[in-house]
Amino acid sequence: TNLDQKERDLTGSLSNAHMPWLSQYIVIKRASQEANYQALYLQFLDRLDKKIPQLAKTVLTVSIDNIRTLMSDDKITTSSSLRSLLKNLGSWLGGLTLSKNKPILQRNLDFKQLLLDAYDKGRLIA
Image (cartoon, rainbow, N blue to C red; front, side, top):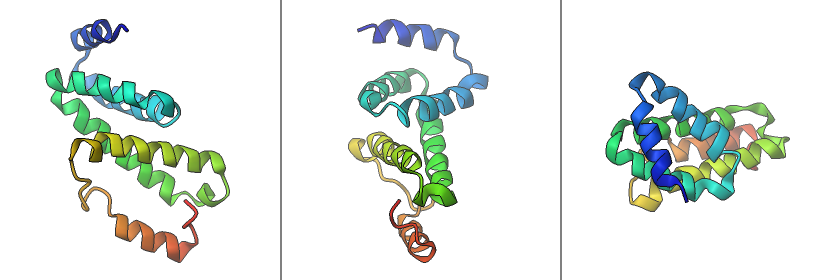
């Protein structure tokens, strides 16, 4: 209900120095752990994208980096909480890209290679 006010507050006080921290916070603390509110966070990012276009790119980069980190973790096969985070981040990545008809580029995240690596290392469960 107060999305307009929060947008004004954030755009008024946000500088380029805060961009990496905010992106990391949105992805790690919010989108990956609070899947129920991902639509709200995506709507908020869309509003901010009009005034701060580099924020969406930074959030996308952080999201992909965290997906890569989770996929390379050895505990992903045994930890259901890590798989849940990965599932939430996958949904978040789809909301950032595919739902807006933006492709996930192979140079950013190579799905074919991820599947082959997972098969070789026995991580297909993730």
